[in-house]
Length: 465
Image 1 (cartoon, rainbow, N blue to C red):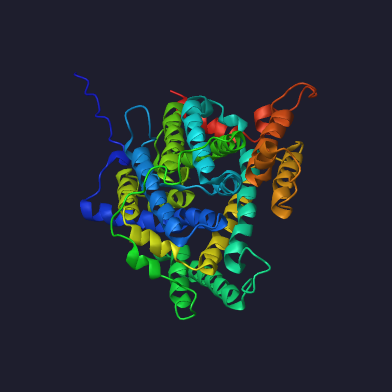
Image 2 (cartoon, one colour):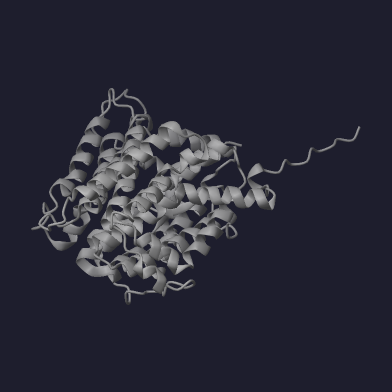
C-alpha cells in the first residue's frame, strides 16, 4: 500500500478574503485605532506649543509611518522585518512624556535625533531581546504601563483646562463641560451600544464633541482651506537632527518598553489566530518597531507599537487574515498623504481631545493594573518592586521641578516618569528575582517568583518540536 502524505494545511493567517470584505474589515481596523494614533501628535504638539499647521503635519507624518510599519509587520520583508501576523501599529503613548521633555530642552531636532538612534538601537538588539524577555515579566511591564497612563492624565488635564493657570481662560466652564460631556458620551456608548460602533466609542465621542464645539465658538478650521489636498512630510522638517546624550538614553529606554509591550501583543495575537510564534519571528517584529523609530525620526513622526485595541478586534471578530490589517496600513498611508485631513484633526479644540484622552489614558492605567494582577505577591518581594518603581515614577508627575538641580542629563532621564519607572522596576526585578546571591536555599524557582513564567511558558509552547 502506498502511503499518501497529507497536504500541509494553509494557515488562516495567509488567506486573502474577497476584495469587498477585505476593504470593509481593513477600514474597521483603522476606525478602531485612529483616535489613539492621532492623540500622540496632538498631545506632543500642544505641549511644545506648536501652531496648528505644524501639528497637522505631525498628524499626517504619524499616519504615514504607522501605515508603512503596519504593512511591513503584516506582509514582511524577507526574513529581516515583520512578524507576518494580523496586527496594526500606531504611535505609542510610551514616548510622549520623554519626547516632550527632550523637546523642551533641545527642541524637535533633539527629539528626532534621539529617536533615530533609539530606532537603530532597537534594530540591533531585536534578536537578543527576543531571547531575554524573561527579564521583563508582568511585575515590570505592569508597573510601567500603569505609570504611562498616570503620567499622561496631566496632559489630558492641560488640554481641557489649559496649561497656563494664570491665563483668564484657564479652566473655563465651557471647556470643562464639553470635556465632561464627551466622557459621558463615551461611557454611554460603551455601556449601551454593542458590536462595531461600541468599539469606536472614543472616535464617536471625538466627532460628537467637535460638532458640539462649533456653535460654542471653540473651533477654528480656517487653516483647512489653505492646506493642500496632497502632500508629503518633508524629511527633517525641523532641521538637521541632534543627538543629546540624555535624549538618546531616554529614548533607548523607551524602545525597551515598546519591545516588551509589542512582545506581549504578538503573543496574544498568535494565540488568538493559532499561529506558532518562535523567537526568530518575534525578533523580526521587534526589528520593525525599531525601524519605526528611524522612519519617525526622518519623517517627523513617532515610534510605533502594536495597538492593543486591534489585538482585541482580532480576538472579537475571529478574522485571522494578515491581509486585512495590511489594507488598514494602506488606508493609513493614504490618509497621511492628505494635509487637509491632518489640519482638520489638528484644529480640534483642546477640551475635545482632552476629554477623549482622559478616557484613553485612564484605560492605559487600568491595563497596567490588570497586568499586575498576574503577579505573584505572596512570599515574594514583588510588592516592593511595584511600590518603589511607581513611587519614583510619580515624582516628576506630582513635582515637575523635583530634578531641577540635578545635572541636565540625569534630569531628562529621571524627569521622565516612564524612563525612571522602567529603570527602577528592571533593576529591582533583577535584584529580587534573578540574583541568587543572598537568597535562602529551597525557595521557589526565580522565574516564577518574578512572574516571568507566563512568557517563559508561552515561549516553550511555541518552540517545542
